[in-house]
Image (tube, rainbow, N blue to C red; front, side, top):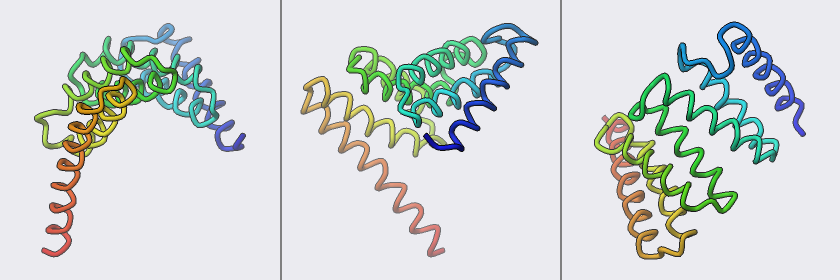
Length: 160
């Protein structure tokens, strides 16, 4: 296990414990606690401690919902991540609900176009895992079209 991951885990656990001592476990005063839960969940996933990662990401989603509501871009990010976590465990129905929530957050918001592209790709993976090959292909094509548009925008910006 990487020494840096252990250091990150130690620091994040300490911060979360400090927040909990001051404001209660998973306080709803601000989304900062959720950010730390998200980061610690990512550390656990990097350490291949997938169940712990899923648990921390689930806590993050609950905390974000309590502080940010259901349409904030951070909700989209954590739903995308949790869809991946649930896909890993074969919890396909839950992965589908989460990826659809992320799509709902990112769709029709041009500032989150890149997030939409990666979420469409993840939606194609969820559909494939569920045996929905046609829907998987459609989502994958939508992701490619989405990313292609931004590749063109970047190319134009670099040549201007």
